[in-house]
Image (tube, rainbow, N blue to C red; front, side, top):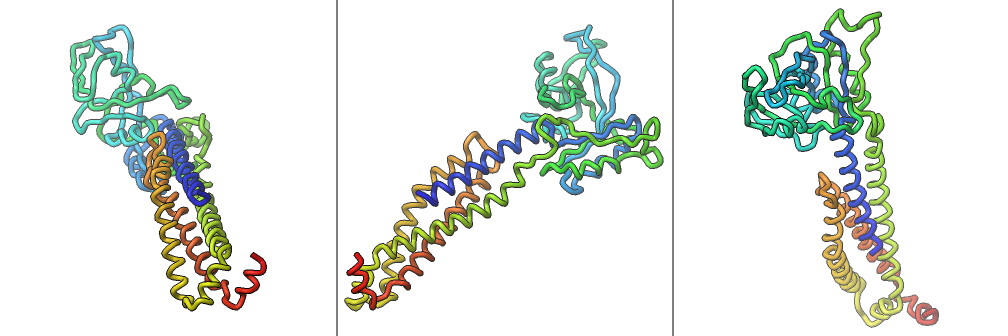
Length: 334
């Protein structure tokens, strides 16, 4: 119960951490952007992918407004993006759907208004047809609202983009400075000689995902305490039976046989405990459809096995501490 509950806590903590990390990432808090009108080199921006903790990178610039036939009086903002910009959108927009085909990407609110889905076409006010290659969510959760109700058009690589966005994971504010390398040579300063500053796309959840820093510390502490708890339980379990065990030695049972009998009893305890713990550990790890449930479950299992190892060690040490010569003292102090 002691070791099992501790292991369930570790799995549950890992599960909660994974859900919080997903929320942090999907809110755009792990995405950073630098804005410098017509100063972003798109190729340099895209090349940031894979550097440090950067998982995705893409360049963006404003395009001309367009009008859909379904709402001819309302202008819809458009943005031109590098072809792989969908990777950035996928990282911080839950439920994003992108097809490997020519077309534009639109927000889910705009798709709902137009009544279209990925793979379909919609008509503009001037009669032109526009293929929908992807739909992404862009909720109003504190993030920058540039793409809140917009159309993103992938275009060929050119140099005069106005924004470079990178998605980092684990979130690293230090790697945000890499955005400065996407600016054009000899044009790294804007009006007044000021250098553009990388900014977090969504600051509502803090600058960094600090909760992840406590995971390794917690896991080491849990494994250590579990091993200690298992050792104490195993030693106390054997030493509380010292009179019977000493009597067995006095009756002629050798110490090795006594140890093997105790280890057989120990294995029954451990197997029963493991079978009991498994469903609780998995439930704690996968609760709330948490991502990386196997990682959280593995951490809990590691904690449980540490306690089991300590338990076996306590049993072995306890057997070695039982002396036949102390039988009378055990009997007198029973």
